[in-house]
Amino acid sequence: MSFKALTPGATIGILGGGQLGRMTALAAARLGFRCHVFATEPDSPGEQVCNRATVAAYDDGDALDGFAAAVDVVTFEFENIPADAVRRIATTTPVRPRPEILEITQDRLREKDFLRAIDIATTTYREISDATALARAMHDFGYPAVLKSVRMGYDGKGQVTLTPETRPDEAWRRMGGEIGILEAYVDFACEISVIVARGQNGALATYPPVENQHTRHILDTTIAPERIAPEIAMRAEAIARHVAEKLDLVGVLAVEMFVTQAGEVLVNELAPRPHNSGHWTIDACITSQFEQLVRAICGLPLGSVEHHSDAVMKNLLGDDVERWREALNDPAAKLHLYGKREVKPGRKMGHVTRLFPHR
Ligand SMILES: Nc1ncnc2c1ncn2[C@@H]1O[C@H](COP(=O)(O)OP(=O)(O)O)[C@@H](O)[C@H]1O
Ligand SMILES: [Mg+2]
Image (cartoon, rainbow, N blue to C red; front, top):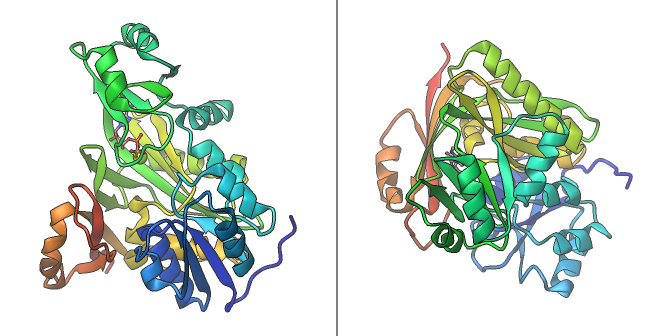
């Protein structure tokens, strides 16, 4: 589909009502664009900052058609949007990144097969279809290993770490998915991610690798930029660019990676959207990951990824959110709250970025 660049005043449709859509809408508003959120719940973080919202299920055809007709381009802020919904919208309205990219990345097996096909190293993995196959694979892989649901997992949901004591049937039940993927556990030195934006014309803008520290499989802290050997940083950036090009991405892509003790870089996961590990770019970079997304999907030039400060971003998970006042009293901190009413353990309620300006 040929695509004319959009200019300020145009409307961006955002599938998903979470904080990533909220921060995209805020960046869009700054550039004079309007946003229209499609969310399954009322009063979502995204809806709160948009001038229009559709609240409906992802299989509500009329709602999808009305949404598609009301906007000039559609993007998504959440990977688990049903593929049928996105394909339906794409018949009338440009979707960026293209729907096929979403379909690859919402399926851990397709994602790893894709990476393998483009010569990107990952941990060893195998498709698992039932508890018997799991028992066999556990024997072959050794321990520890990680069983993940192929679809619908995020923030560690649908993941089980396997040890010699784990019973396969029990692990299979806890994983909860229809199809699983077993991965050899990576004894990593650190976890990093690279965010890359790619424009309509193929131009690339790559942020430096950052270090991500997880607790219970949920991102806790991002240190930006990561203090790794420049040679590893260069390899990580090259991997991210290669993936973005092979996906023919228009938008923003996050590539989560493990750096092994031996200095190898293995890709863990792809996210074809702004990413939690890129929140630091809002306060520390000339152009944030959210603004890059808006620029890319509207066919506009990408911005500078230069950072004027180093940064440490900490998520406010669950009850942590009660510490918002502390952040307001910290002269180095920028507070971001997502407007979620209900606090649940591990829920991403906001984040705080502490800045260390370059002198
Ligand atoms: N094969 C693995 N080896 C070691 N740690 C892992 C492995 N897979 C996942 N993890 C840990 O769990 C976290 C979340 O897993 P991930 O596959 O990124 O799923 P998601 O972010 O979608 O929940 C990772 O960032 C990492 O800390
Ligand atoms: Mg992940």
